[in-house]
Length: 224
Image 1: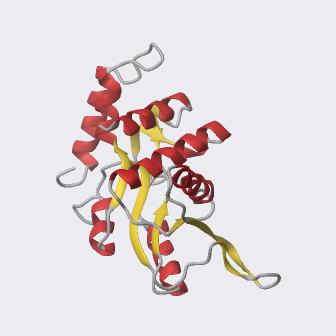
Image 2: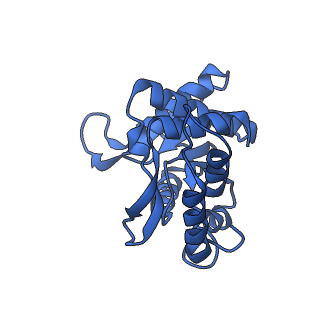
């Protein structure tokens, strides 16, 4: 992993964004780990998350005129990522959607820089499960103008099957024809934490690692 990815893993552990044990997911599956980006709720946490997302975009040389975050969890991600890009000399707009379109004042669906023809837009989100929120975001942006979705950045790729044998991220890559970039995959996360301590403790032991490998053997995507 790159240094910025390892820093990102430390962030997830420090704020207990990722936890290991037994959890029931929204889908009803029993999972040996859980990711909750809602734990990143301080100024320090969201600033570091924005720096990580910006580093990923710059590492892959993704062109970006506008950072879009789907409401509501994507709102602070878009702001933090745009601020972090600006700090590194790449000023871009940020934008998010209203759940209810405003019919007074400035009106409209979007808050921030409104998507316009020719813009290269990066979508930022936390964790992709079904991909529905990303697909809805793309449709919303394309309704606003002739924009190009240049990339999607998410925190963790769970590497589980989507609607077919491929992962949800792989399916989205095919549909969008654009990079869908996780900060880390679950296997990168587990391998890194299994190989070292964080804050003097072993976050992922042999039992945790074996449980996740068994889970991915049952629910993992082809080639994941």
